[in-house]
Length: 351
Image (cartoon, rainbow, N blue to C red; front, side, top):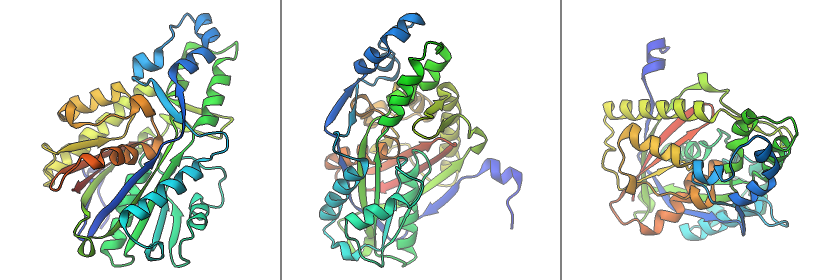
């Protein structure tokens, strides 16, 4: 039966898992540190001409540094390194992996999928399905749901999910656009979000809970779409750059998260007292707005954006990997993802 327009407005997607567990979560940090002061130096003449103060990135977004890959590294190198650690941490043989999903925003070409290069370099078995899921910064959480659903269905026993990001080409384009003598204050605002982006990679192995009592149960997730806001953040080819309506993205993104949160509680989810809320890492303003919108205690939200920036689809899993050693059995973790488009997903993990 088709959903009515009221159903479309008022409901979430609600998926509950029966037999999926997170067996490992890892990250790979690029070696180079790119400071916000570096971008201030690159844009000094533009800021002077437009009578804008330096230090906007750190003062407004709260980002002092982000990471960058070395000259001889690619984001795929980071993905492979994170994946190798995830497979080892999970304690499985790579021949057992039945699914590889790449959730990166970054890609060097439209075809083939990024996953095929990762599949080849990891020497995964021929029976392992591999494909990309691209959904802006929400891709990794979506991939966890897809993999968990396939495990529940008995289609696979193990899935490997990866994401790696390298926004440096967009950084260079943003600096070029803003250093144009005709650039305006509006251009600075449109490129501001681009300069908050950072590089990094993450990987996770998901398996059958009945075979891995030591694993962390993936309880389920809810998701919600607000695609009428699809034009608020658009990233094109590297030489075209990315344009973002940061104010609109914050306003409508938080509305979507709050709507998903409220409906989830009406549907029986109890998330008011989680051990940790691992959010997509964007900025101080976004974090403060999340706290106000759904009433989360600030100390339960781990923050990595001040030192890593916004690492797109890898931001949330990198933060989860950073926090994982501090969690203990029985802890409840809520992953709160949001991606341009707009889409949001809230996924619960029982440690």
